[in-house]
Image: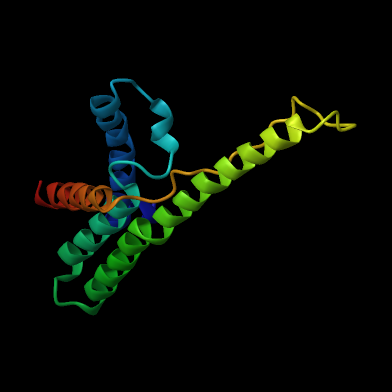
Length: 156
């Protein structure tokens, strides 16, 4: 299959898997409990987005040389994704946290208002996902994981 012969693509996909797997033991070391849901979650340490794009840029550098225009494109793409992961997406997560708190406060208010007809006390609201972005340290560690993985694959 031709697609699997594209080494930079395979390296980037491996970097995502590698970073997602790393989240579980890192979380265990910090929180002293296992959380295997991190295997499929966004956010957290390390950033799989950063690992993917950093490994992709590294692989492109190995394939085309560091002075090629395609490597320049890959590096700029990497920087934009990493900036977005630590900026916009992190702030979106903070907004989601605040909105979830406001929703809980509103639910409490409506439950305490005297006997509203048709008020379903058992109704649950789906909370917004708050772990969307990354701290800068998570982005840096993700990038280092991706670069290390790409270098390891190309060197060996």
